[in-house]
Length: 220
Image (cartoon, rainbow, N blue to C red; front, top):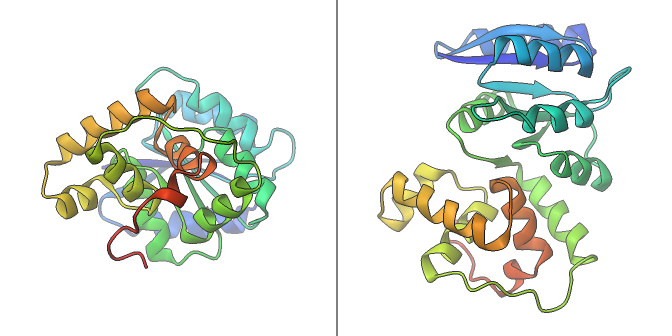
């Protein structure tokens, strides 16, 4: 059973999310909080699999709370940022804080449930609108000539991560095991100096890697 903590200052939003999550046979809401401070305390006490985090809340905001949660020693909860705001700086700040996934509140119920499951399985999640914003945002900030000697397989895996593919999807497309995918991810993270898969996707856009990359099948 995947346990979830909801952190949002809107009680109606929390109620809707709880009803949605608890309706799934493999998901359960372990607790709710109305601000970042309470959210961190609840996550520390309950150690859920996933924290669904709003950004703009009274007192401690979601990015500050996310930053603390992702600093904990493993195993730690994965943080799925769920927000109304899709401005470039909001997206970038949430990713910089270490969020494992980012969805907008206009996402469908199926997308949210799938997102929780994706993070619980150890994958990162960025909605297509977020990856487009990353490309536009980091194209303006790109340093010149950053090049890291990734192997062909590592480059393929990074392209797939940037295209929003999960571990199981990458494994199926590349005809390799999920454990082999995780090994490639571990190696490429070390080479590019990224903390996690989300940071690897940011690096892929920021460094210009995605400009040089071949399109991933099924994403064009």
